[in-house]
Image (cartoon, rainbow, N blue to C red; front, side, top):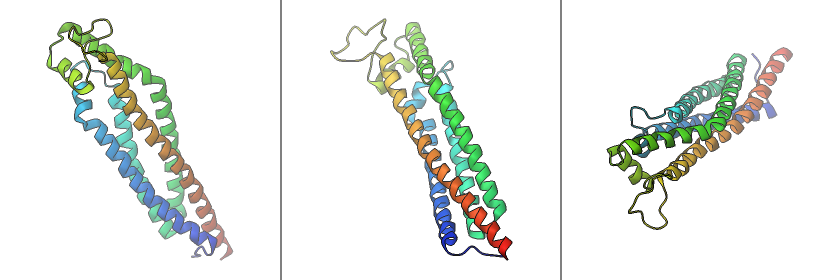
Length: 211
């Protein structure tokens, strides 16, 4: 069985290091997803029975992607060390699938960003109109440092205070940007991984054909 030599050996070890970093990145994505899912402030704002679940759908996708990236990174390390065309080919295929799914999820999130915020705002407004002293409303006002709605401001509001609909928009925009930045970073790393895996896979095949 032929072994890669020279420059391709360097690619082999670069791919191994890359996959280890890819595994660490998967761990980071999983950690961010779990933080967004169990963050006390976020959970408290979406704890009602009729609260929209669109935001958490995106978070669950992030958790799933992080777990899958960790698994793929492990197989990529094994493929690089063992110089296995089968493992490297599977690694490339998995990266391609994850990349496609991530692009689709990113487009979905971008197109539905305003809807997610609007759903939460409508949920808050409905709850506020039903009972503006409920535990949920007080939680919104405490977490977001806001009061009332655009249509019904609090009578004792301090100058410069914001309504809770604006607070909701700012809060969830920041959370969604975190998801977006993490996704862009992973996509860039995956493209590099696909290039490295194909170069090494072709080098392994050529070395075995020569022998």
